[in-house]
Length: 214
Figure 1 (cartoon, helix red, strand yellow):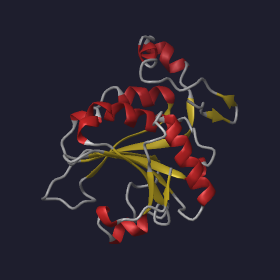
Figure 2 (cartoon, rainbow, N blue to C red; figure 1 turned 45 degrees about the vertical axis):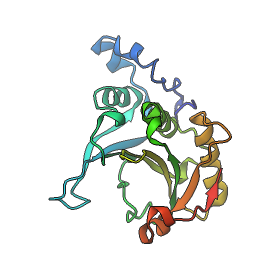
Figure 3 (cartoon, one colour; figure 1 turned 45 degrees about the horizontal axis):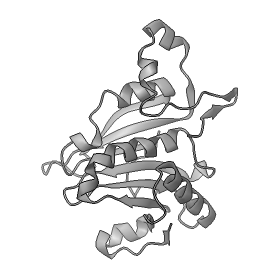
Figure 4 (cartoon, one colour; figure 1 turned 90 degrees about the horizontal axis):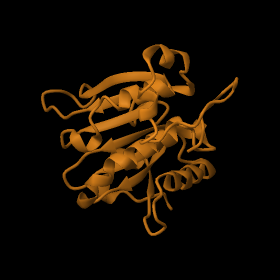
């Protein structure tokens, strides 16, 4: 996983899902001394469907973090995607970007979609955390084009998507797709598709034509 860096130099590699337990063994006083800043602040959102509320009102801001340690503190104390209610979403976006097509940072962009069939549910949590680590660890050379990521928990099959800000920037979009596929260790035979938000807003998901595929 790529390291996050600051103007003062590179910070230690972001720990993977097995390594982070070492950090939890530190005494509180020690943990305060060794926090490592990320390049960006990130906000985690949770969507749970409630028919009595609007879609936007169902989006709940959970927490914002900007250090490696605060990230792990948050993600080890929330339910995994496989444990939440069907129909729910987790979204992780750069602070000040809302997880919706209409946000000015998203409206001209699109998303790389990873579709999981029902029997892949046991792998969902790993795919999600690896996607998140690609984001906060800035694994993408075209990081300025990355807005965030969403995981959809659905009865027919789950989906993970990385959102980008400019669907017309083909070089950046393709680089992000390749690095995402590599970061998740997806086999070559597994294809991921890139869809524009403009298409998603006016078409049913089954009718959306992919702009790119890797």
